[in-house]
Image 1: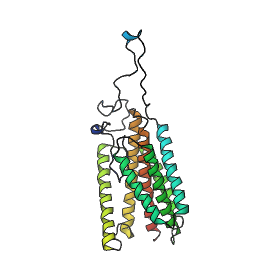
Image 2: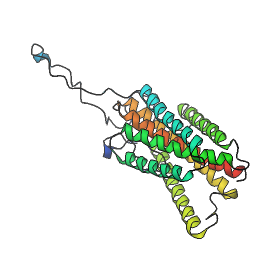
Image 3: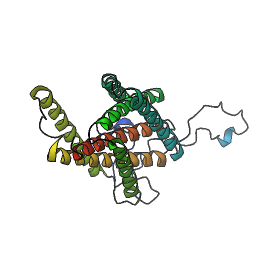
Image 4: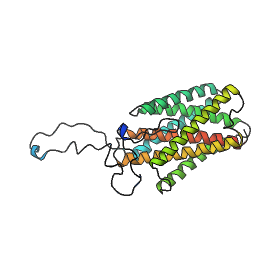
Length: 286
């Protein structure tokens, strides 16, 4: 169960990577596997079951095996990663508000670590927590800096509340099946996110080489529309994260996959917070 945010390659359930893929309408209410009988975590039987004909023989040698992932695992790992982000943000807010150079460096390193983990086949808890700490430092310093700007006092807290509201709203929409994650839904979100990221990069290039506001995607009326699109995309990626967690639990993903679920949720929430903070900054006239 690979999960990530819109910035990174989203490697979800696919037969090519040994994970279940979107092969039928998901979230079906029946007990049948909607992935055409392909359970990526099936072991083909109980590896510890004893052959009746060998019942009188010595028991087989024990081979350790990880237990399946549970919702408690996902909640615990997500709490650890988000807690690390908050701890890093506290450090950045208190000590690095006036030293954004160091904070930006931490953010760049965090981005590199995020890419590394996104392309690893197995989760690395140390790598994920290092990403969370450095990303938190960057977010805390940036938020503290914005909070000191004219008319921006309280903007970071508004962005936090807005991010929480988006998370709760999408969770309710997903659990009540208002939002259904299908193959078409996933393709749409991926294409939209790719276009959003490309436009953002083009805008940055125009700002760097042409000066001014670039193409205007981050200011004025167009900036407001672009910011709303960014928040909506983040919300849609939350739905993909929820779906991947649900499938991982339903089909017995290994316990270590809960770290990937936590990593993906953290990336998406960071995305939403950044877009929310940018949108609030534009609306408040900075």
